[in-house]
Length: 217
Image (tube, rainbow, N blue to C red; front, side):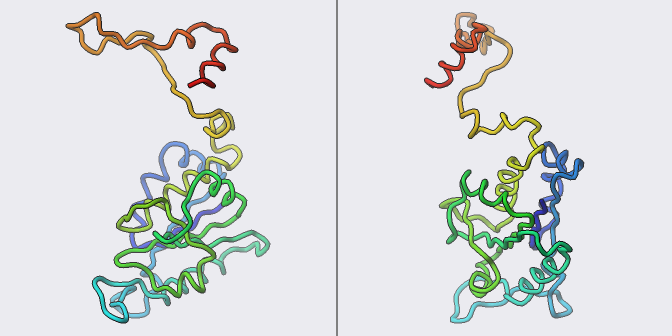
């Protein structure tokens, strides 16, 4: 599976996608993350990709032309035309992203994310270029880069082999409190009576009892 990110700040993604689970997944060739500098498709010598909004108002708006050219270029480089491709515009007006959406998106072979900036993106991008708009919640961020990272992380977890064990998926095992050593932790050495303990059920060795405890939490 390949994730494409169209952005003005490709350097934002380097450390995150090279580390931990996603970094190892790329080493194993289970997935690819490719960033694309939007200014590559600017049409003037200053590499300008934004302009003032029609009708007035504050800020600048990302223009439709460089985004259109970027998406067309990415699609033209996909050799297998039978692969399922989806273009996603990160937007505060889009459908709310959740675990079910992650499961849906993992069915695609190529995902192309358009990261907005400034006062937004020319509406024609949503109308004619993007297949859908996605929001990560009722919050306004500086751009679509963090939402793109969040969505890619969530979707990648459903790619076979990325986690190693599918049991690691929280929607399979369920979300419950977890503990590790030490069994007893004393946060204040001067007050030995104050102790934080691991629940006794988890120390029983009785897997049935442990499963029941987790279910009841």
